[in-house]
Length: 173
Image (cartoon, rainbow, N blue to C red):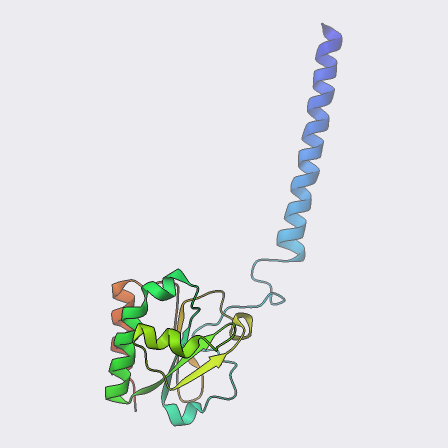
């Protein structure tokens, strides 16, 4: 009986040592060598940062609204009525340009937008990580200097949609 207890203690001690080593490895790897806010990882786009698209004439546009979309994205499709409303508002007020950005082949982009009732000034193909965007849909509003003044990720709530519309209605020409 005493031998069995000693063996159980030995097995338990070895298991504790193994778990401790594994835990130390995970902590060192994830928090010391590659911290969550590490500059080495691609940061997501934030208010105040410059949109990395040199081919857009930010100055001419005034405010530029980038819709980062994918035809295969369920939330993009569900957000179609808002994008259509946004498109109509911007076309009548002329306060901003609307640019659709697709992460993959844009051949289907114009038809996709037309099916949703969205009219845009330009359609671009840009990799998500180039923009600092993690997924679709994403709405980015940039000013005349190409700096982000607003960014929203994912399917928007009705309150978020209203914030975007209000921000664009109050936008300088």
